[in-house]
Image (cartoon, rainbow, N blue to C red; front, side):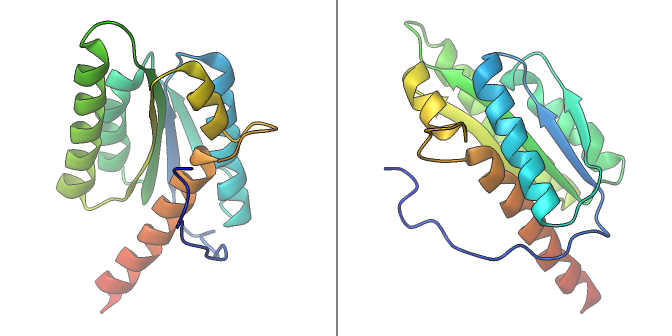
Length: 159
């Protein structure tokens, strides 16, 4: 199971943070699970109203995340799913999303929660989407990681 060794941490108060979630639109059921998980994490961390933005696919996540980071959000959560097919398209989209989201985080010093599933088949995606019966909740994990990192960056900035 890919979630083995995941850190366990209690939610902290992030009610003072501006948080945005950018979610792709492909694979409705998986995406709804990821989005629901991210929203649950925000609620657990006392983020009352995260902004939710939808984009067509995972390839478009970085540009939307960049706009949100530039708009002053303290944390951005990127959610998407790419399922392997019979062409190199999978590799290109996964690399572009990963590299682009990393660049956003580094260029803006804003944590970007990486909730982009890169799966061999739809069954793997469903198992990671935080749905009833799923073994993992990657939407929740991505949001929780972004929020925890935003807290750490706040402490670093405060000295």
